[in-house]
Image 1 (spheres, rainbow, N blue to C red):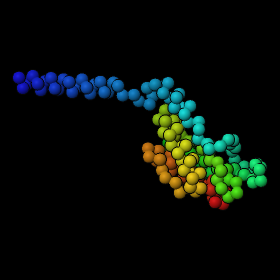
Image 2 (image 1 turned 120 degrees about the horizontal axis):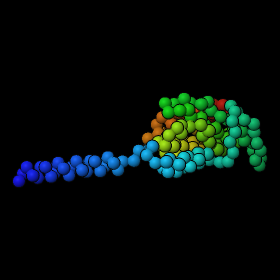
Image 3 (image 1 turned 90 degrees about the vertical axis):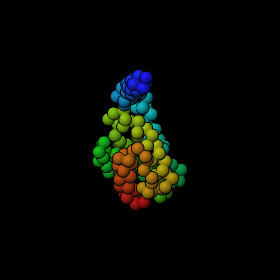
Image 4 (image 1 turned 180 degrees about the horizontal axis):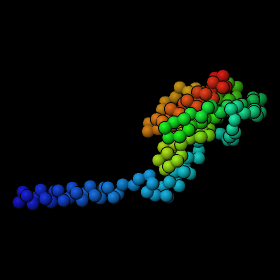
Length: 156
């Protein structure tokens, strides 16, 4: 009788593990998930307009002039990260991430969550002294490195 209970327990455990393994969805298992994640990455700016270059021209809005500075591209393990800031009156008014890892579904998923947080932290702190995003340490490190470069160009 005890031997039958052990066999039943072993069988049920094996069935449970097999069901869990087949139910696990990887980042490459669904193109619908990847496309949904890809569209979620778009809001990585805090305002409108982007431009490229080391430091771009200025535009007038009201009585203050804003200037855009593009930080150096930070090379990370998963790909380059590059940040662009807009400064008006000595204050960072806009941040956009012009380059970031997006080579696979996992990259897109992580950055869709992490980049808006990093942008908001930058606007709140007005410096590169911001917290890392858990689960996106590599991207966060590259972001801070490029951000500091842009802030240095702006003299902030």
